[in-house]
Image (cartoon, helix red, strand yellow):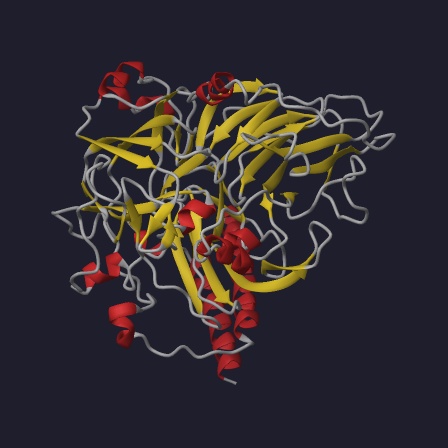
Length: 596
């Protein structure tokens, strides 16, 4: 009854508000989009073996979040799992609002059968991103989906408008669920070879007899002569993948919100956590379908042959099925220089406008004095206090029971320490600590990711994009600054670091909050290879950081502040109705704007 009453009153309110708009009032805020996500377990068989996966609104992968620059995004998340949940928004900067970041350092988890509404603005951003569950290795069983941020109408794309858009969620996959995989790591073992690679939640097309019968595979239907924007995200557990479409060129146009100098590739390496956009023109004959391939890289590719995802590109006038051997990558991982050169070829399109009208190259990052240096070194996992752990600068991060920004707000002492070393320490044994970086607001720093582990790693910084100015093999030294690209480096949020190599990035510290720095490879992240960067404006007056949201959840030392949340199976349905009404009102407002 109460829900029905609220539903009726809310409908009346929206109707009256719309009439007010007809009478001449205008909206003061940026437009909004609203979503309701119900995160739950379902049974699926992507590799032919029934297993538990994590679905969003009953689908795997989850639905797309589609917004435009500066839109406000509301996502009401209902946790139907049997353990706590957080969703994070890979590459979304949530300016001044780390409260919405969806990681343990800033948010209390959503308990089972509770809901929480994230509310953030995609301010000054465009491009291709994705969301995923950030806790407890859950991403290894799903819960991920794409995010698209479109250009505003007044800012042109740096290419002709495509005839269509296609999203690919690719990633390595295990037939064990995430709880079993956690157990493997907790026992001190490595995960070993994945059971396959999924493309949009589906297994491989039967391209040879090694693929079992009956596996559902992805088919992409296209029309000859048309050009499509293809957004590709590696949402896997720990494996770098090479993406290619048989006989078709991949024209790289965007990297995680930054438009590139347009470069053609026959195939492209996409590391864990990375996102790219390509333009692909359907310019081949239709004598047969074509393979879409995502295969494991930087491994023994002969032994890992079964770890290959295969889908089908189907022209509307195709005359036959794809057949024959799969296309192979043009670069050879046994020659690491050639592989690294592909990534070095990604340059910023300095004349293109991104989220703002001014050209991307108008920010002359290479002319800014560097105010600090942080060298973050990763090593192979080791035992600390009897447990298998991964480290940065000798510290394996211990997540606090009370999120750090929440502790700051409520003056809870002793939750974390601001003593993370800015260089690796060799005179202390590896240790477990809640130690974070005390960064300076409006500083301009260089961060060196030094990978002394044995596998490719990708590093991500929440709340920021950074300029990837150099990468090389060996150990970074101060004289390497002479090799930096200070003119047209790509700006992104997730970067690969090859084993025995380093990658240097430059960051302008203009986003206040507490922001996660992590390795995206889930095995190393789960074992503690992360930290946070705390950036506080000493003259804060409410203009650079948002206050704690009214719906913030409490836990740890503040759990007594948490009020009980009423639970109802009808809640998602009610919110779905409100979501529908909201969408209808937005259509009405668009009509009003035309009529007025």
